[in-house]
Length: 93
Image (cartoon, rainbow, N blue to C red; front, side, top):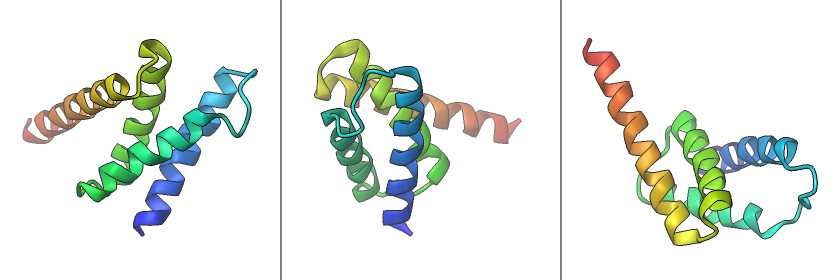
């Protein structure tokens, strides 16, 4: 299941990214970067497919804005944490 979640989350984010950025090659280095980021999340114990999709999209958005892999990872991690807090708060309500 883990490899399917990784592949699915990356494919979802990459397809949407290509829709917004028509001049980007299918084999752009950002594609492998997102795969590494999502794989690292799974290695750290995150397997929720919806969260992986959110993280993948947030990572690509941050990478475009910040032009730095480490900063993009941190920004995507923050976005994921905020989503988890919001999701937890809505469950408590």
